[in-house]
Image (cartoon, rainbow, N blue to C red; front, side, top):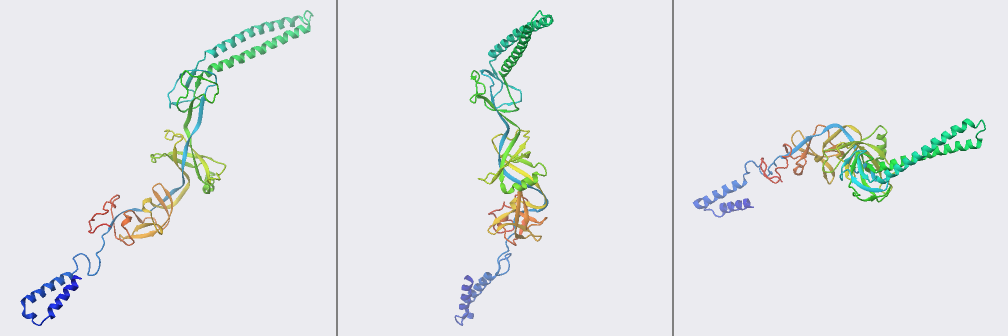
Length: 410
């Protein structure tokens, strides 16, 4: 509008009257307005030709090449860690707890002494059983000698056959009594042995549930002394959808399937094991089936009861094209990536993605091996935009600031 106003003013000055050429003031005014008009019409230096917008600066981006490699076919799930064995330690005899030989939460080995009960009553029973056996053993020896004497004279008629048979029967009965005494001794010895309670398995002990000085009963549900969990090895139980059951069974037929488990916050330290259990029934209410993997847990990284992320590897897929997962964007028309052409311009390209393995995504369609894919700086790109490749982490550094090529980043 300023340019049109100046043109109108010059025209009015030229044709307003015929005495313009005789007025120096008028001539100076015309020349000044003409100069201003020419200045307004001239395009600014470096901004393009007249009537065209300035060329936008190149957008800084970070790129990564699409690669072709073998990737695993995996199933991911959230599982629960389970102890390989759980033992509730109870007393097998009635008695008074006199001492505990471990601390709460201590790692114990099979055979380690855990508790000691008062064994005095059972030691007295053992002595009594031993005394009974000694008495019955003496009677047995006497009965056997009596049988020997009668056997020598029964044929001569000095002893009746009936008396001889009674002597033999008495000796046999005493022999049985001696065996019963020996069994009583073994029982008493076991009771004395049971007063020393040892760990049946190797594992992690829980808290002591019965303090020293308490009286415990044999095999009483309320008299659990301590609970021990076997954590080497242990299980991780998890559920997968029933629609992948055929694939799991297919690859299980070829051999054990490997599995990895990680706990939240320590994804860089996976524990490796293998699938050892497939449930025989699909849960009809949830449409899932239970699987269980066994882990050696040598470093005791997994703990019973905690959640763990499980990755089950079914097989390997060769010649898969993969790109960094951050390169894949989602728009109104689906997923896409920006490909950098050789002339350093961006190409908007829709893609079909497959599985995600770690920080990489498998490209089923849309990307060829070796192509440069934008991994950072996509928010400022459009199809055909000029790009400038920068080191990783530098593409977003200029957001909202003036870039080196002039202009302000959108």
